[in-house]
Image 1 (cartoon, helix red, strand yellow):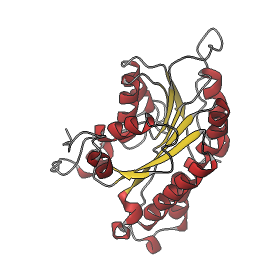
Image 2 (tube, one colour):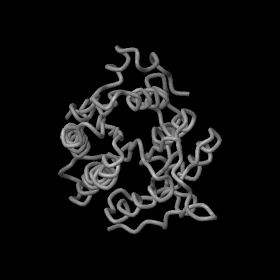
Image 3 (cartoon, rainbow, N blue to C red):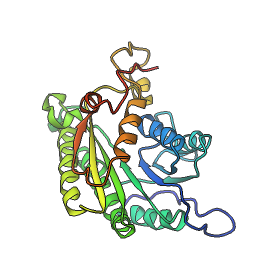
Length: 271
């Protein structure tokens, strides 16, 4: 297991009674899509658990921390639990489930957003980099589903939204570990939808277009962004999916699919 910083405990004064607001947990929430989801879910009335490895005390090379995300979400009225987390660490995920239910008494929406894409030719990379992709992109979502969904099922209702990529069906993307793991995530979505039917809806958004994030800005610099969309498009998709009935489950949908249904806004342009 990979050690993680200690999660902040309940607020002073002891444990609070379960709250009426729905609670969403987002992995990969320090920047990019995860950060935007946190802001927009908070604005829509959710309290939040924001998870990532990048914190104010342990920043990454890329800009953004979950502390910064939490500040922006709190400005939208959310109660936010800042939860440093390495999704590869099963024990940390199990402990997080305990912490979330002690703090909020519920978790209504689990968003598996954290992922890693390993660049370079697969056979020229070390096997360690392959394991990095499988541990984060497959094992991470599995651990979160494993430790949170039984409690959702016990509560009688819950939703899981997995974030996949157009790379799952495009080997030409030339990142074999990413294609393999994202395709596996889609299969995991369909399998758990059957196993958890009638109580937890499990769906997947296959992001098939470029979304401008801090990661792109850091690596690409000042380039033409006209072909990139704003991450708010993913907020549209997640919020729509989270409001569907529980029998809407086992679906893997693209942004194009949702645009055709009028579920998300027309084409956006990165700011």
